[in-house]
Image 1 (cartoon, rainbow, N blue to C red):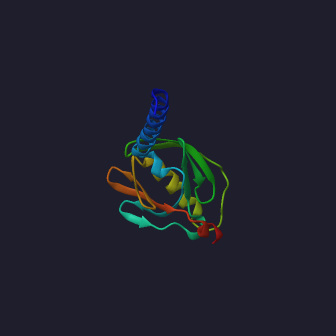
Image 2: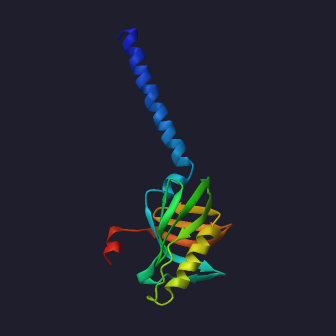
Image 3: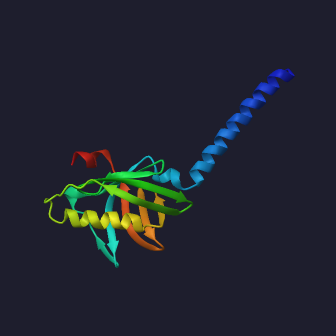
Length: 152
């Protein structure tokens, strides 16, 4: 193999290594696991009491490139978020202003959910579970929204 071919292969190998390094850095920043999935609330915790969401008004969150959005149960919402390692800052959030009489308790649940989202200062992703925390206190636990859940 002549010097010109060695140079070409060297550039290709260096480019591939550089690309893989960039991917590794992006994933190690913590944000890669939270993005690209729809998360549905499984429970919220207030003063040590676990609250199950109303089945027909389960809040959903999507985290994409610094924007969190979804349905809070009745209304759609969106806002900004930033991640630094395991730390997360969410908000301010804006939401549509529909009033939902049904299911009973949906508006109260929605207000609680939006409040807890903005109180979170840390997060963990383990397999298909996203946990938002304030310090070491669990605020909201999500699981990945599966296609069959949309059909229910």
